[in-house]
Length: 215
Image (cartoon, rainbow, N blue to C red; front, side):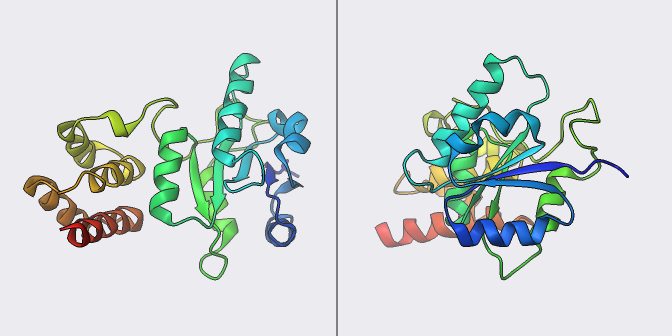
């Protein structure tokens, strides 16, 4: 029988850990921890790290940077994916994922969708890291340390045309904070309302709403 992919969940909420274990244990090898310090020694031996953003003490965004630094210093060429797991607003979560350079995010919206299917989007078509040589693929975001906040309006508008959906959402989030909106930015955001990705549509809707209330 093929070896199952291994997932590590770091979440300080007992009910969340119980629910995720119930949902995933039949399909994946799962270990769950209530703190990053408990999980620290096991991280390099898994395929995907499901990381709560709003942990007590050190937050998930800070932990993700520590994890990536750990793998870099140890010279691990095929590190696990790091996926944020949170009930934050999708626009904020997309922007946070962008800023931290993680491999993606999953919203804790257990009433809609299937958690296993969402996990599968990151692991689809790949064997367990411990059996296969290639890195598990997932939607990519920008590199750590690159902040969209410092980009010019022209650069951000270019991201809206050529970036992946997470980069577009991040660019929209930054553009929406630059008030009042320039006419060309407003036109671009209105076009994003028709985007096929819900995170892009929601980001544009929120940015335009902020603009209308500030005028």
